[in-house]
Length: 468
Ligand SMILES: Nc1ncnc2c1ncn2[C@@H]1O[C@H](COP(=O)(O)OP(=O)(O)OP(=O)(O)O)[C@@H](O)[C@H]1O
Image (cartoon, rainbow, N blue to C red):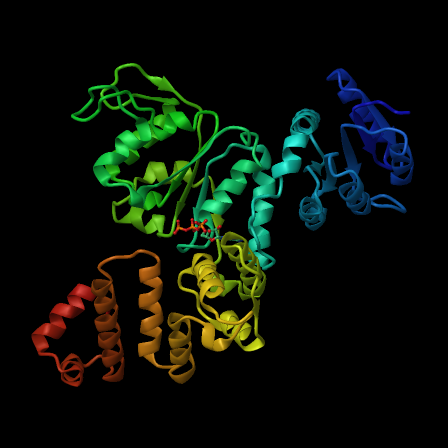
């Protein structure tokens, strides 16, 4: 029985020799094999904490070995060694479940530190195993679509880190669910996950909500209050709708992130915290930075890793599964039998544009569980907002009015305000550009075609910065 912590497999004896020596120097016990077959046989009698494997080997190669390990010994992390020319294989290695890859030729120190990290990870994993069995994939995230698979991969890749993540996506796409999944699959999974929605709190309360307050800090502060930062200590603070955070709070947040401490409102003693920040927004933060609504330095601090969630209409292939999932949930919630969906109704759900994304589908399923009269959901059972929209799509598919309708729905679903202003700007700009193009730049003629006076046209040209 082989009891060494690290098993190395490589057909190149010099690589085995270098690794053996360096690991021994770092007081890490290891055993090496010249082919994957020998390693697999040894696995019948004992198990290492981690495996380091080459990719190109005769007979069973590294990828095949990785596949077997990830199927039968998922708990053993594998480090795959690859040459740069094999980058594709390396990317596949991640998808196949490898722990990390080590580009060849490697630096000894890098190899050792990677091995140490993998060993620490393996130890942590086994300590958490029983707890993880309960919540490992109980994140409830459904998604077969490639864009969702990408999200799951990101969650997997980030599972060892406490790095800041910025999640982008329309309202109802599952940003909070993904943030929670990131937390559950992180070294902080046993610590608190505290969500806070910036858009849902009145602006003047945000500060004390986040940082708490001392007794007597302001009228009505009758007792000391621990803010969300303190509650999230050692865990994760999920800041939803971060784009709505007032500028002065952004400044405070930035300071906590760099100092690791803050003062409660009205307090003089610093409170130390270790909090991972996951932020989310449906807005374009880069735009906000440009127009001064969001601090550039805070943006860069939060935007270390970006996860983009697809809208539901961009992952139509998931609609059927999600529908079934939500119908089942609603049935349990309401203690009734699960409804099925007729072919026509299913087609309709599939083709709908879902401006409110997964949340809207979830609500629709709840509605249908209560309102549909039969066991099977028919087209007629679907709520009006779904069918009216569909009529527009089929009847006026190519009209600009229907495109405008969709745009309005989308903006409203994303919680935007004052949208007429933006629409009007775009509308007039497009009219002007097209008229100028039609008259080959003759302004007076364009003004006439549009029904504007010459002065109006000149003013608009300036407003829109249209090149003449
Ligand atoms: N992939 C998914 N699988 C299963 N349920 C999902 C999925 N995505 C979202 N949901 C469900 O849809 C609802 C909305 O998700 P969530 O609150 O995470 O969205 P959000 O993007 O944070 O929305 P908002 O920006 O409006 O806060 C939740 O009930 C969530 O459980």
